Image 1 (cartoon, rainbow, N blue to C red):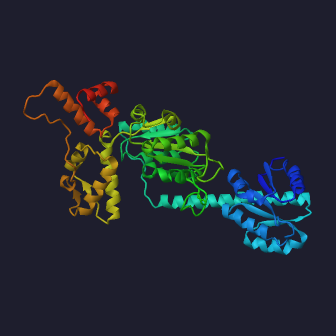
Image 2 (cartoon, rainbow, N blue to C red):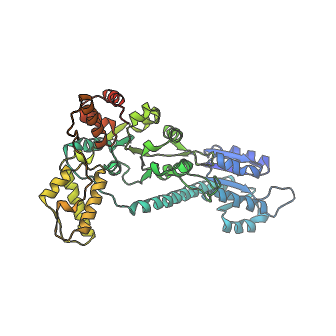
Length: 457
């Protein structure tokens, strides 16, 4: 017979406890007995119970049921989803019925009937699971409402640079493999994460994103793993973390390169065990997530510098997707620009605007250090200020930039010229050493030696 959940039995009569445990241990996953109600808070923090069978009187000579009512309220303060069933003598039936108005789910009379006892406890287990599901849905609803208040794009473009990205998404989306997305700021890493989710078997479950760069060390555990009431000064109620709320769906951890080594260690432990322990609790919650991470930093360089754990990298990058910067995507720049042009002409009630040929040329020749995010802002500004029916180059006040190398008129040595080439490439690639090495067609170690040789900071 399939067992049916976890039960805590609290009664001051040890023979009653032993009898109930002997009968129920074959029918439930875990049956824990307790003769001292003062142990209840500690037991609830260390174990996951579905039902508490609670006696109404514990002190000799006192039969008013107030002790049972007090501990019932304390239990529900700790976990409002727990099902409390009162264990009561016949004379206390009216008291037990009234207690149901204060949160008791049911009551069982002493002496008890084994068949009825089992049926009542089993129903309590089912009620607890329903309460947990409702609470989880409410929690997910809050995150989903936040998510729906934001607007998200589909991935746009068909350039050669993007073909490997689309191919990798197609191959891995329907697996549960952990994915690490690399790319400069504004290249669309979250769009790739959402696409992976939408093409996966988890598409009907929640997609939850967390910007790790915005989390301070003090709130990291609470935000990701949840907390129990009283865990810290402002913890006025139990709260599920992002891991628990995303269970069943996909969890996107953006800017993972910003985590301190201490936070990396805590995250690694959760990923290894697929269990989280809410702050202030000893109880572990199992989580089932598809993990997608992203960073704009070079993780391999961070590992060499001692700023990122190599074992954490192995956990998060079963599959690695590297997004090209917008400047390397050729005519995708125009495709994306026209997409934003349509969006903002609709938004601001403008007549249909067009990009003049020389405007397209200007957009194609710009390096877009802010990538798609910068292009979007430029298009919105141009649409708002334009009243001519077409967008000319003058409508785009793009940041002046060096796409080439300024050597000046004075003669310089070969070493000086090489230093300028490297400095310009580093600036153009916003410090991404891998991109610089690729652009200059040299190995990374060679590049590091030259950076050291020319004292480039």
